Length: 335
Image: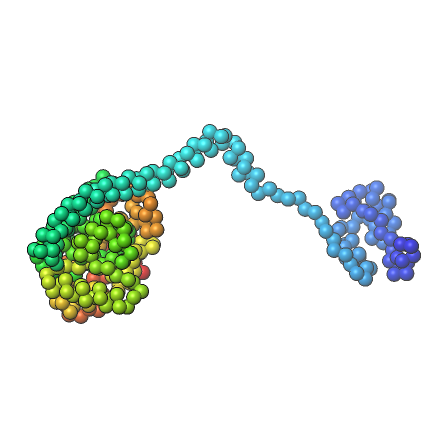
C-alpha cells in the first residue's frame, strides 16, 4: 500500500542514509537520484521539492556544558578553599550586624538612665527655660556622645562659624543616615528638630523627644506642615533655634537631593541667620534602609559660614551650593 501511494504521488522511494557518511559503501548501496556523496542540505532540498507536505527535519546537536570549566575549577580548588571562602564572606556580613546590635544595646541602656534624669528636671526646665530647654539638650548630647564614641570617630570643622549659644538661627544639613541625629546632637546646640510624628511613639526615645520640644510633622498633611511652620516661627521668635533637613528625607544613594524652601522661609521671615552644615560619612557607616548594621568608619561635620537675607530662594540656593561643594570635594555626588 505504501509503495502504490508513492507511485501515485510521483515520489521515489528514498533509502535511509547516514548524513555524515559519504564513503564508498554508501554510494554503492544507494540507487536513487539523491544517492551518492551529497551533503545534508542537498538532500533536504530534494525532499522538500518532491514532497507536497514537507516534514520538519529535526537534527540533534551536541549540548555544550558551559559551566564545566567553572565546576572543574571549583572542584580543583578543593573543599578546604571553598569552605574558607564561604567562612570569610559570612564573617564579613556578620561583623556589621554584631556592631549594630551592640550599638542599639548601648543607646538603649544609656537612654533609660538619662531619660530618668530628664523626667526629674523637666518641671524646672518648663518653668525656667520653656523654649530653649538647654538642660534637656545637654542630656541629649551626653546620650549621643556615649552612644557613638565606642563605634566611630567624628570630627568638626568650622566650629568658629557657629553663632553664639544665645543666638537663634535656622540650621540646615544634608541627610544621609539614621546616625545624622546622633552626630548633630554632639554639637551642643539647643535646636529643635523636625521629626515624623510616628517616631514619638517609640518608647524612651520618642518620649525624650517630646520632653525636648522636638516638632512633630505629618509629611503628607498640609495642615500639619502649616502647624510645623508656625511652631518654628514661634520658637525662633522666643530665642530658640530650629534644625531642618531640607531634602525632606534621607538620601537613598548618598547624593545630595533638591532642597525644599520651608526652612529658608522661616529664616527670611524671622530675620535670623541660616547655618549650613555638611555631614560626611554617616551614610557609609549606616546606609539608609540598613539600620540593622553598623560599618566601621569616621564622620566629618563641616559648619559653613552663616547666611543672612530676606530672600528665601536665594538663601536656599546659597546653602545648597555650600553643602554641594563640600560633598563634591569628598567624592560624593549631587543630583
